[in-house]
Length: 66
Image (cartoon, rainbow, N blue to C red; front, side, top):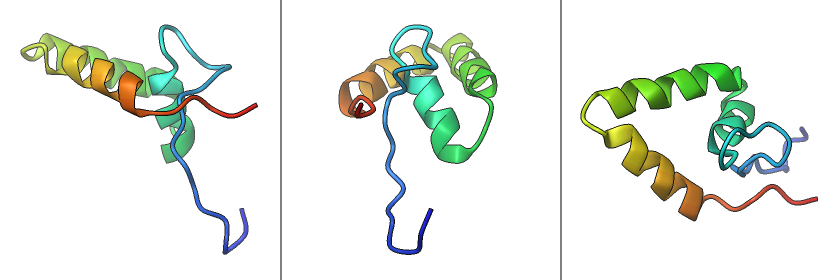
């Protein structure tokens, strides 16, 4: 990545289970997408916030360009 290149957040086309949100977040933060999925499950079990957050992220995040 060069100095003038902007890092963008996209839903992943290749690393997806449902919508590609966790795969995209994993690429953006340089983390394993499995860790992101575990975080979403943990948030889901803590009052359902994870489910709502995932749906909102799925709607807001654009899909990765080809």
